[in-house]
Image (cartoon, rainbow, N blue to C red; front, side, top):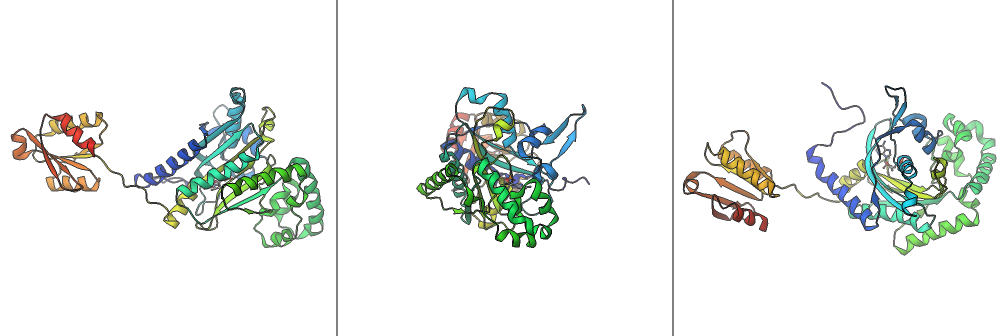
Length: 420
Ligand code: AMP
């Protein structure tokens, strides 16, 4: 038997209502903040991610699905969306059409990670990118939108963590200070951290190794070395969050290991999903657009993992998606009425009514059971004495009320169903 590839999942019809609810909440919040949807290809030239995410990151270093296509070009399935969105922004000169582009997306991402609860190889993210402004209000807006989406889903057990990575000059200065601090401890670092010491030293704060953690406990913090401009920017972000009542905590150890990040970084973590607790992460990336060959324009964004959010929702029982219902189930009381029933059903469907009927030659009792199983609001009983008198019976399944109609009086039946 062929099974789904490790780390990928099917979303079965019974799971669709909660996905639809999540997606509609996402779209309505982004619409409330006037973000416009963008869709980019699922695969891109490998170079885009190598440059746009950074060679020294785990994503590019060990997680990408990269392959040569038949013409020998190196292709990568997108592991995240920012690089693709920025590529599209540059390629279509969106900055020429408007000075600030507020964009959002929903889609599948691919990373070859070790599968575990809340971590998959094909997973789904929604996120936003605002390109063209350095206003700290936009940094705050990312956090506020993510928080608003989580709130609309009924999630409670949340913690917003924010930090600032400042501007590159103060960060470079700090990296040297961190190097000096770490130099005498170098021999004790894990082998991974020894590598990162050279390639991506800030990531040492992310290490889960006990030895590394001990050493990092007393490390100097970037926030203590920020220049005035960076501190001002960070202060404005905090004030904006305070003014909207979003609870947050400054976490000076929250570094996102991407070189193009500037100023704000943030994460929202859930206490309801186990060790993979980050529901979303994001930050400002004022260097990325230029790095990818575009104009020198600032950007800020975030990405949220949809599987993890739904896991948190399930664990908190935070919402109950509405049961899926159909408007009408047509029950044949006698054989030989197939053409009338089928023709009428299609006519109802053309009028926007959701209708189902029996395709399995079932008994009347079994058809009624099926009408109940599909949560039909109405049943149209076709056959028996009524039908020989030229009539059909419309039964309201919520209150049991029955109405008799002339079998050819389609418009009246339609009206009666639509009234509800
Ligand atoms: P990142 O793009 O790594 O900052 O991730 C943003 C969010 O996407 C995380 O907070 C997770 O919720 C989600 N995410 C990242 N990687 C995975 C994965 N392999 N499986 C499921 N969700 C993921």
